[in-house]
Amino acid sequence: MNTHAAQQLLEHALSVEWAGLPDAARASARTFLHDSLCVGVAGRAAPDAERVWSAVQGWFGARQAPCTVLGRPGVRATAPYAAFMNAYQIHAQEFDCVHEPAVAHPMATVLAALLADAERAAGPVAGHEFLAALVAGVDVVATLGVAVTTPLRFFRPATAGIFGSVAALCRLRRLPLPVALRAFGHALAYASGTMQAHLEGKPNLALQVAGAARSAVEALDLALAGIDAPVQSIDGPFGYLSLFEGGHALQAPLAALGRQWRITELSWKPFPTGRAAHGAIVATQQLMASAALTADTVDTLVYRAPPLIARLVGRAAFAGMGPAHARLCFAYLGAVVLLRGSVGLSDFTPERLADAAVLALAGRISVQADDNPDPAAFVPALLVATTSDGQRLEQAVSRQFGSPAWPLSRAEHLAKARDCLAFGGSAPAHEALAALLEAFDAAPDVARALQAAWTLSCSEPSRP
Image (cartoon, rainbow, N blue to C red; front, side, top):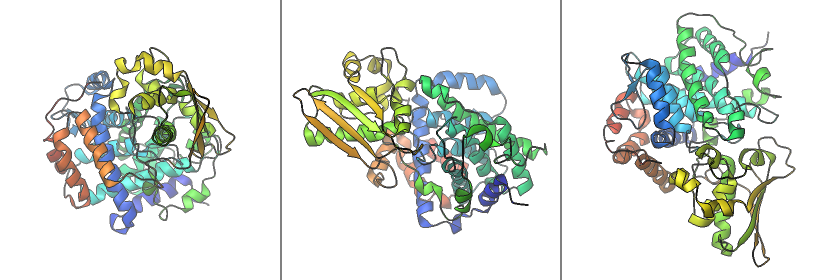
């Protein structure tokens, strides 16, 4: 009898050892852990963060709580709800890293679940164990994503994210395979995530990511309690792939496990927006630099890109739109770039979103789908500007800034980390956190080491 997919994924996850990883995978694990922690701190100041936190506090009440919430010194939550809140904050501003071929944000769910479980552990969790579990979880999320051969139907950062999170938790605890399979089975029962929230530009996307991280912790606890669950949770007749994806080819991605470390394929987000808009943002900046394109000289700006891009960020800007809509709207983002030079965390306040000059300019910016047959393609693309004096300016996009093909420099990575911490009110933690992450694998106690960095966080967050 052939080994089913859940078993193959979990056998791989449980086998990951930090000492056996190539240098590139180790470097990526430390880098994107740093990036994700800082983005999560910035998420404390996301537009809906305080309302979400208020709701979360009502779910666990006054019970003793062992787990930290990013950017909230002295605040504690129970493990499922710390995972929920941290995952929400990591994804809430569309600033977390992404695995482009998988169309997934694996770190938001996987890291949030691991942080919670490490803090409630009976004993210290070593940095190298935490990082190995992180790598394992990213492998599972990305493998499920790259196996898909049809367009996105459900919100994969949540639907695949729960399985990556559970795999990471099982690796952190070094659970026996039968227990891990039960945890996957419970994850199948909890898996959810709709693209309707994306279509309507609503903040539920980050809440779905949060729900996946929380449910991963709960799935683990149910498995540890001995409660049975389906074992063919991935490729069974009513398993994950059959329910959530239109078509898939899983054999090659499964065969790559242990040889192709997916964490090295992650992309930074240089801008707090939908990743699908990044190519167009950079292309706009390039035309501004090379051809002196300005808000005053542009007549129309059209980004011709693969269908996925048009679907994700091709929406129109309008007065009264919320931050979640604007972050996924190149018409708005392109107008901001033309008027202000870039897009940052402060560009999604009610005042900025209501800027009449931005909205007027956004009406001249659009995204058009090309005939690329790849349902997960981000490039190639072409930005075409027509100017008020009749010129046609073009900027080709063959790679995305922040991708493995065009990574952030160390200085750019640190600048983003510094800005995120400052936005979330934790600027004093920058130096200590950066130093910690450089040698995180040597930390004897992850929870204690991170807590030492967070104790430096004492200011109030920037308010959007």
